[in-house]
Image 1 (cartoon, rainbow, N blue to C red):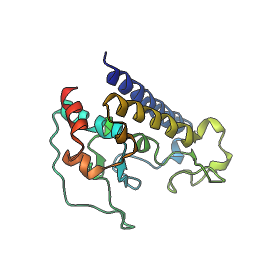
Image 2: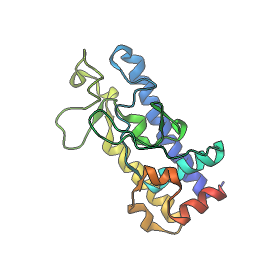
Image 3: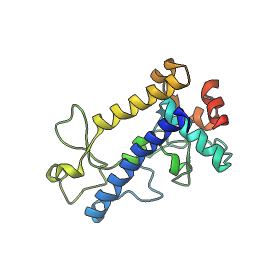
Image 4: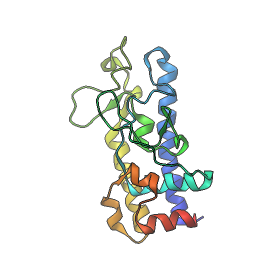
Amino acid sequence: MTRIQDVLLQYREICSFCDSFDVRVRTAFPSQIACRPGCAHCCTLKTVCALEAFGIRLHLKRAGCRLVPAAQAYTSDGEPLCPFLADGRCAVYAARPVICRTHGLPLVVPGEKEPDCCPLNFTAHSVRALDTSYLLDVTRLTKNLIRLNIAFCMLLDDRGLSGMRYRMTDVLAGALPGVLLRAAALS
């Protein structure tokens, strides 16, 4: 196993942790979670880190997907929707970024006094009353993702990539730095 594969395995563990948290919250509070397939209320992610851009491109390659950029769609509030949405569903669901795996769920957000979640969730139950085991610490999660992204970029011999963000439209179009595209092609 290459060192890049080791980093990808650790990234998948973070994704699995997020997915397990999602299942735990949905199981404990099934009537309080409005998030469903077809709901794209939160799908406004504009950028991802190098590791996540790589993961999406690798997924597209392995799945043999050739997604064609569509006309930009918008939320009812005028926010641009993610270009990977097709009929309100994520075309790269298995490879979706970490933030997409936690959108809408009860989160502890830095600088906020109260836990936060999608306004469509927990309408009949206070998020503040939740046991801490049902609150995701965004700071800890983000720090781990940043560390993995730095390690990934160092393995590509381009640490400068670690401070960059890549637009989802560019990830879809394959308009990424050559080192990322070459690594995805070789994986």
